[in-house]
Image 1 (cartoon, helix red, strand yellow):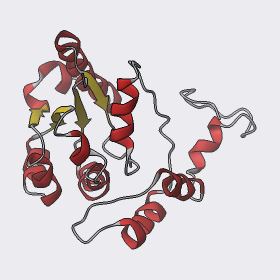
Image 2 (tube, rainbow, N blue to C red; image 1 turned 135 degrees about the horizontal axis):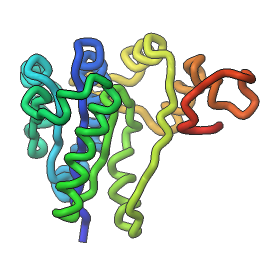
Image 3 (cartoon, one colour; image 1 turned 180 degrees about the vertical axis):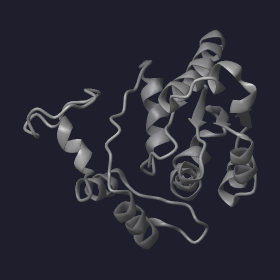
Image 4 (cartoon, rainbow, N blue to C red; image 1 turned 90 degrees about the vertical axis):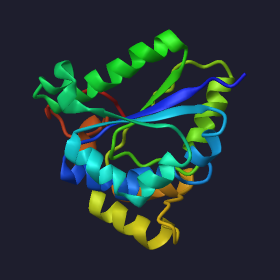
Length: 204
């Protein structure tokens, strides 16, 4: 039996919405991502945003395509007192994920917690379903930062289909990232700059 999952994306602010709508979501709409898992494994797609963000999402072609594939739910930040009250954007994101994890634990669902600026390879969600089918319960993915302008330019030039969908293989995405590493990542390397303060979320 296939375990059902929901995708949760907190996104607000024009720049973050631009990246989500033009790059992140189009990559999620690649054939082996949402279209492949929606019929049997994707229970719903949840977007946490504000009123302006919801309006932008509803008017975007990629979101309309998404809504035609799976159940789409919006959660407005201004109506969620515990979430909206926290001025720290990272704490607000965590609060959004926490709400969905709590409800999913009651229903027995999996939760795919995505940043709005993450770029998925063309078969990421199909692989997630395959890993869950093996009995795994947690998948942790390293969020490697890249140079946005260089990466989005390459995506537009080489990996965007006529309908706007972004489709890039794991190998191609890895090569693109390695060629455009964000300088901030150097703080996470074992042989990186000494004495530099950083958040030790990952060590390379």
